[in-house]
Length: 287
Image (cartoon, rainbow, N blue to C red; front, top):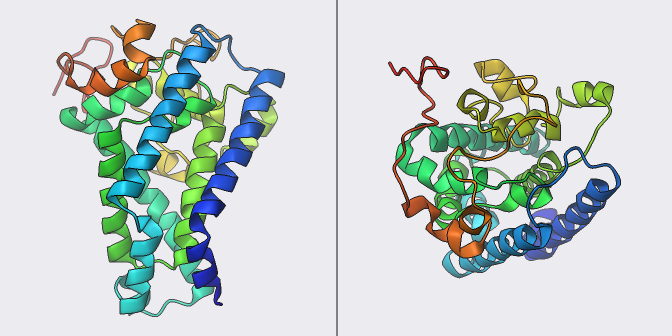
């Protein structure tokens, strides 16, 4: 059996194993060396956030039983995509595909902040009143569907090897849990790691209630895109212990940290703030 077939046949077990392993490590790390004091009942938040993870997992398996690796396998078999068309060697195709897919995820993240209708969905992720390992997997089901469709389109255009897709999925899930962790890293280590991976202190800035800070540090995995396109912010103005997590006006745990409230949140209220194209965040002036 080839490596591609082996990975394809064991993809669910591989992803589940890495998810549980990384989740356990980060969760224990949060207990041993927390960065911030939590403000909301952990029982409430974890039950709701993990409940949303379970709901999204079942939904994806029902709607897209072949998932991203199935699309990748189909493209490889039929010669679809740039990598297959140009016959890029496997040893180059894997890292190139992982980097390219990460860039697309970065662009998608910018898009859901820039388009008001999509921000309605994405604010479910940002409305969490605390910031820990479970925040990294807290997304509205409609955003998960949108993300999967974008991923399918990317795979069709790119034609990545199946192994590259599995590596990308595992890395994305693992780094999302890591950089959403309520964990403390030595300052020197954090500065060094930021050149290779998004760290918790780097991404936490993105979850600030301050809209100019929310619209920065969009990366989940690779930190290069924010530095390259000018959306990188080193630290929050109020400091990591002093900054406020969440979205202004959404501070009721029953509304934003309960499963029913999260599912209904996109359909409530107007989108009047957090516009990515603002010129002056402090005055609210728009172009």
